[in-house]
Image (cartoon, rainbow, N blue to C red; front, side, top):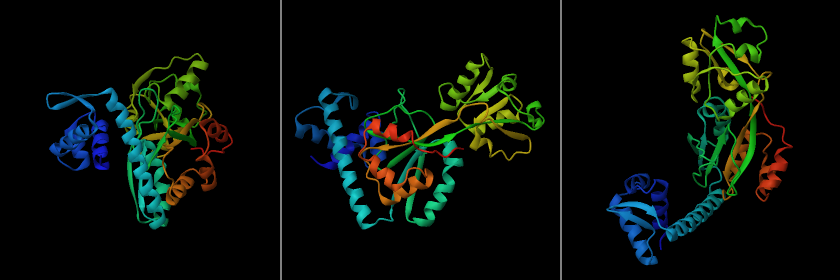
Amino acid sequence: MKLQQLKYLKAVVDNNLNISLASNSLYTTQPGVSKQIKLLEQELGVKIFERKGKSLSSVTPVGDLIIKEAIQMLDIESRIKTIVNDHIKPEEGFLNIYTTNTIARYLLPHTVDEFVKRYPKIKFHIGSSQLDKYGHLIKRGQSDFSIVAQKVEHDSDVIVLPAYKWNLGLIVPKHHPLATGKEVTIENIAEYPLISYEPGSTGRIAQDKAFKEKGINPYYFMTVMDVEVIKKYVKLGYGIGIVAQVAANDVIDDDLVNIPLEDVFEASDAWLCYSRNLFLQKYMLDFIESFCPHLTREVMEEIASYTDNEIEKLSKTFELPEY
């Protein structure tokens, strides 16, 4: 059994049993991946996958157990390499950050700019964060962080920490009645067609809760997760937009006005998430503290040995940045 075979196995699973996509992700050939998986099955004496023609159709029960063990072995390999790299080249490495477009565009740049001045050899990848249908974070790898602005269900394999609090803001056309500078109330907002986030998202949950408490049933003309799309349709006059305040602050169009709504809707929480198996290198700890000042190196080192309940208890004591 070779580690390379286990990597092929994991890649196939990560690509929904599509060997072609798996081979592309590994920068190798499809026949090579198929051959190594067959050799592994022959060595173990069991079928890991069921097949339909030349395609893989499903994972066998014993294959599911093997894959889980293989992923743990690959995690250990990755962790060992990370520990060695932190010792030999403490100022070199890679940061995979999975997050939302809003966070990547409006909150991360300042931290990245300050961080790169200290660690110019660190490379970045910023990708889109994903939750499964149960609200669990879809795991990426052992050198990854996720920064998300919506509630994450606790997972025994993932540490979830509060990163900051964020407020909602209102975007209206320059000559809109709400752009007069007078106090904006939830009743005023409900008088107009709304363009905001999709139902179930954190920002929308805060809105729905506030409207429900007032017995108001607002009209949502359009729901969309992309802030720039919301701004576009507000500018076209289809309604008023409710978005994260950090995004509303970025309104530079002379035809739009931004109105803070921290007194209308409750602030929402954003979360920093990473695998419990992740070895936090020095530069990772510095990046986390730069983005989340309350998560100092000392705090993060303590959290490494905490249970979920202990982390939740500690999290309630943090004074979070608010945007």
